[in-house]
Image 1 (cartoon, rainbow over the protein chains, first blue to last red):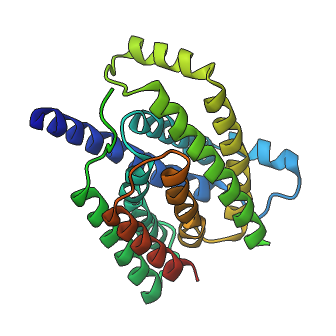
Image 2: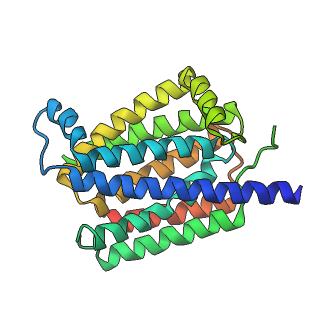
Length: 132
Length: 120
């Protein structure tokens, strides 16, 4: 039973890492590739063929698939806080790579998010129902 | 305008992700990660109506998100859309019938406070 739960935990961590990184970098490339305005619905389709946007979309597809895999065994109420570590990485990416201004208030928020993540991922098992 | 985008994103994402969680839990744990096995899983899932509905909802959320990103900073857009946390944890408890213990509620509450600080 303990080897089973250890196996599940390792698998969960690997999959969660893929979920988080594909999401963060998918968002980054999307933001980098998008113009300042998209006036017509047609522009929304056209912009998808800009290389950074395409890469962003591909990463977000990877995010969707890895998240589906993760949800096939882990609870939604576990996955949500654990993958929210991505919010911190997004703030970092915004600050370092996109030169956005990240205020003290935003960093405080990021720390609270981290505390929430630690509480849920360290304190509870990924799956609360009996395995089928 | 940005709050209109956020409202659309939150509604669509919540619907999409809860449907996704429901469908995947019903499908059962994916144990085999070899390409052939993954392809078979994808073929089965592509015909699952909950997955189809979930992908449709997420497509709506994606285009709304693109709209938001053109007018907002990334370090605002991502945390602001995390309002979905509140809705999804409640739905996980009452619709998906997950056992959300006090640690998970506390964790979710902390995340929500953090998100509020980041985005307001």
